[in-house]
Length: 432
Ligand SMILES: *Cc1c(COP(=O)(O)O)cnc(C)c1O
Image (cartoon, rainbow, N blue to C red):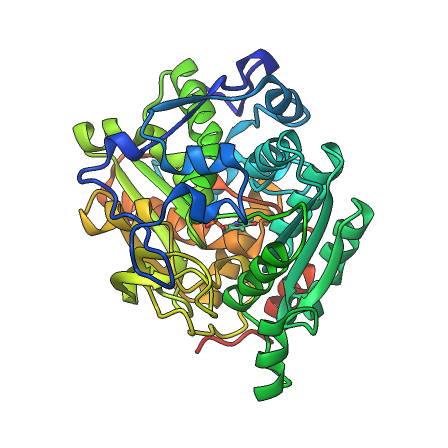
C-alpha cells in the first residue's frame, strides 16, 4: 500500500471528547486547596474558571459532547491530516512505518487551539469578558489570542521573559489577533514585582507567569484565567487528535505498535495517546512520553503534591514535579520548561502504562533538521523531542529487523522558531 496522506471529511471532526478519568488504574488523587490543604471544592475554583470547565475538570463521564459552535471553529483546520513520513523512513533505512498527526495545520501552528477554542467558548457563554494566561514560547498565548478574538473576549498574556526576547514573532502574532502581551516577571502584579525586586534579571518561568495571570484574574471583574495544559479538561479537549488519528489509521488497516509525543505539561501527548490507552494495555502498544533532559519532570521528578505555579496560588496537584520553584535553563523548547506534568499522565507513568524518556537539546535539533530535509516541514523545537525518540525507535526497528508502526504527534511547526535553528546550524547551542 502506498498511502501518503490520510484525510477525513470535515463532518468527521469528533462530536465528543474522551475523558480518561473513569478509565484510570486507580482514582486520581484529588487536588488540594493551597491554603487549607483540604480537597478543592468546585466553588473554590469559581473566581478563576467558568462553571462549565470546572464541571468538566471533575467529571467522571467518559464522553463529553463537543458544542456545535466549537466544532464549527475546529472545522477551519480539522480534521488534521495523518501523514506517512516515507522519506524519513527511507533516510533511516528502517522497516518501520512512521505516521505523524499534523497539528501544525492550525492557524496558530500547533495543537493548542483545540482547547483554546473550547475554553474561550465556555467563558464567553458565561458572560466573561476578559481572559488572562501565561505563555512560554508563545504558542499557547497565540492560540488563546486567536480563540478569544473568535468569541469576542479580551486576552491578556504574561509571556516568559526569555521567550519574549528570543521569539518576537509570536508576540506580533498575538497582537495581530488582538491580544495584549507583557514579559513575565512583570510590574503588573504583586508576584511579578516581588520576583523582580530580588532578581531584576530573572529570565522568568511558566510557574511565575501562571502566578501573575492568576493574580490578575482574581483581582479583576469579569476576568477569568485560562490554562493551556496540565488540567484534566485541557487534556480532554486535546483528545480530538487521537480520536481522529485512530479513525485515520483504521481506514488504511494500520495499528500502532509505538506511540510517541513530547511532553511539556502533557496536553498534546495525552491528546494523541489517551484514546488508544485501552488497546495499549490490551495489546502491548508502547507509549513513550519525551521530555527535555534540562527539565526532566517524569524521569527525574518526585511523585508528590506540589503547586502548579511558583507562588503557590494554584491547588496542590499530585504529580511528578521538580519543585514549584525550579527554574529550568533557557532551552529553545520553551513549551517544555514546566516543573510539573498533568496528574493523569503522571499516574499512568507511575503505573508503567506509559514510558518516559529524556533527551538533550542538540540531538533533538539533529532530528528536526533531518525531518525538515526529508519531509519538508520544519518542526517546532518541542516537536523535535518527539522526532528524536521516533528516529531512535525506527533505528532500533532496523537493528532488530522489526516492521513496527510508529505513530507520533507533530505538535507544531517551527516557522516562528527559526532563531533556534540558526543557533543549531551555527553551533551556538549548548547541552548542559
Ligand atoms: C506547548 C507546546 C508543547 C508542550 O505542551 P504540552 O501541553 O505538553 O503539549 C509541545 N509542542 C508544541 C508545538 C507546543 O506549542
